[in-house]
Amino acid sequence: MKQSVLTRYRAMAYVTGVLLVLLTAGVIAKYVLDIDGASGFTTAVGIAHGWLYVVYLVFAFDLGTKAKWPVGKLAWVLLAGVVPTAAFFVERRVSREVAPLIQAPEPVGA
Image (tube, rainbow, N blue to C red; front, side, top):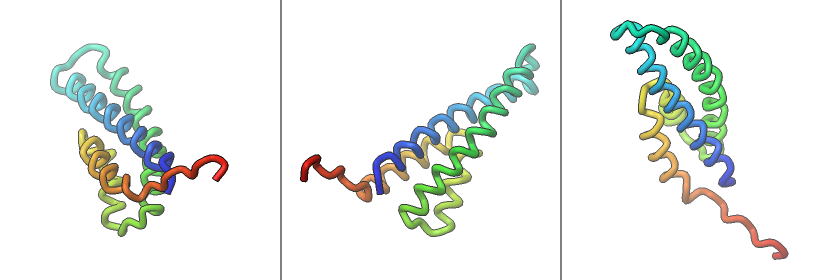
């Protein structure tokens, strides 16, 4: 497995996690605190999170298939993008597990 597969997954896990935390804060601001302007913020962040979550799903699925994860583990990683802050913890655990599977780059001219 190449390092780029893990790097893509990690980047999208962080982006998805941050957007989900922002979306949660926006929903609290909109419905609980009744802050003006929170509606537009929530809409924009919600749309961004929705589209980027699809990209996260593709990259996580790619990583899972290359790492030969069982279906249950793959589902757990895929759902981490919909639970606020879960993506950060799952990404950390997955990175530690997958790092030994990464192939070292071959030296040039070898």
